[in-house]
Amino acid sequence: MATRPAGVTIVAILAWLSGLLQIVGGILTLTGGGATATGWTQIIIGVITFVVSLGLFRGSNTARVLVTIVFVLNLGAAVWAMFVVPGAFWAALVAALFALIGLILLYTRAANEFFSR
Image 1 (tube, rainbow, N blue to C red):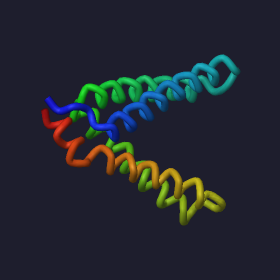
Image 2: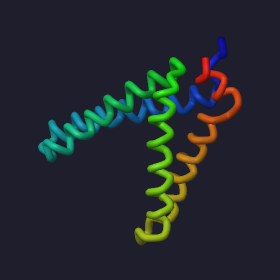
Image 3: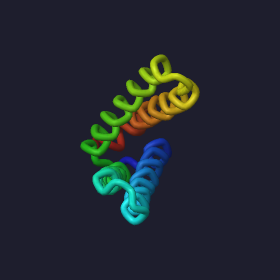
């Protein structure tokens, strides 16, 4: 049985924290008089992100595929924003780097062994 690589653990922790923060943000939006649809959308996405992060911890290849899709979409959006959205170059560059690093960490040799068990 392959042990979980540190890179996968890092990505899973970041996804877990992201999901938690999305849930909290959604609750704050709802209780602060914000848009109801926005608050519920944040909560739903947060719960999905949270559940997927737990799948990464367990070695679920489905979770890895879902996170990969999200990272690829984030990477594409970040590259687009770098050249189209005024004043967003540096923030978009950082977002692109995080997505790229996440993709690399999920597809190292050790990660491949972990997810193929």
